Image (cartoon, rainbow, N blue to C red; front, side):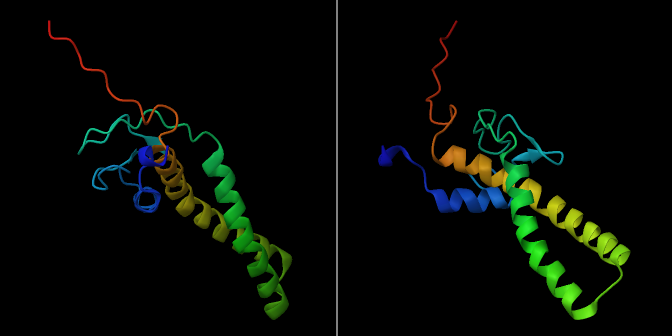
Length: 130
């Protein structure tokens, strides 16, 4: 089975950059989170991806683990008013989440591609000439 797996690290890096996991040149996403059906550069089909709610879950998990100690440190050091902390950290959290979400989605798709999940490993059937 290992001979069928594609290299994971380059695929994840390309996914983080929101590039095609196969060639690394074509854009994986059109719009903010919509995955293209195929890479415009190499033609790799990307429509097999099944990221679903995974990227949103991972984004909240990562952003929350960054924000919690940061909030504690700011509160301990500066003792700001509650509304200042709420407003400030809401803006910081939203900015962080909006930055991470498409990158994490790209990594999810790249992981699925590298492990040949959900149809990414199927060979294309030759089309009969008419």
